[in-house]
Image (cartoon, rainbow, N blue to C red; front, side):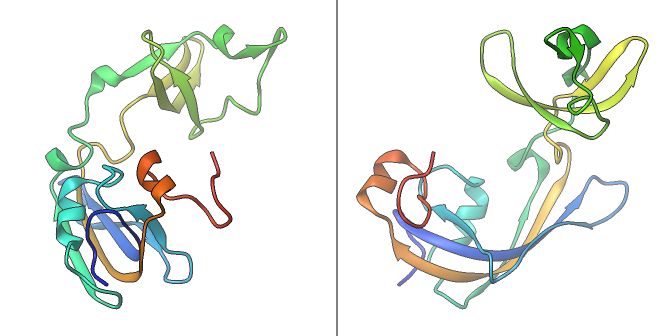
Length: 170
């Protein structure tokens, strides 16, 4: 069986990232015993990444370079903002658990879209947040292996994503 549309594939990989200043730095490691699963053709991974895996079989190795334009895009200072601390209060008290530098918080933009922001500083001005993706501005390099391939279930195809063991989980 080969990697093609409507197949669920499992991959192990090492991701390295380069922002042009530091050279390739290790970023993420997905081991063979806990592979990343995705539905081919569902737009759940970068198109260039999926393209590089098409036609491969279980046990095949792969390496893929994706420049930042075809990954998370450029880094924009305009995506950083300061939010008043009062916006983070629950029942009149500051939420200490939520307000930590490095914490990524799910939020909504002014149109109701779900976005994630990382707290980069907290000071007298408020909570400084960065809404750039963590790898914005980075070129990405993946090296890995195809661990598994199976036919997608009809429900997975209609929903556009992989379902976990035992069925639907969302």
